Image (cartoon, rainbow, N blue to C red; front, side, top):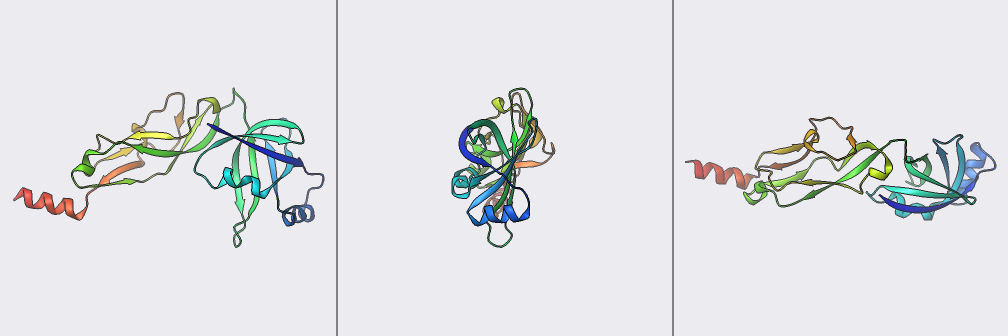
Length: 191
């Protein structure tokens, strides 16, 4: 996984009034949990753009007043009207405790069904996996070269070493759909 550097400042005051003041000064209230105690801190909103507005998953090196901690972003809240970031929860990670993250799915290869006139469709953009953060790749690569017309790849057929996929085994990840042109070609060749 890629790493992301983020600086934060410990919050001296908690509560509605202090949180409102933090957001007014373009800071985002955050919580780091998973360690011995929860750490409340703020970070600058503009520093979060490359972390949030991407499908990639990052290990975040949090520098909170000089103390560096490895974490992953667990929960994110947006304002319902303005879409500003309201709050972020980070989970502290280590080499022995498994974590659950959603990884982007990347399709690879030219499917046989696409050559025959079908259309390749990615049904699940992300898959939820569980494992040690050191074993988690940047994305899940699914080879679709042997996929024929009307066929699909299900979660149960995907195998990632050292990771457990938590999605339903029968859920469809990618499929080759029949197009009208492919159906028409099949109908005329069958006569």
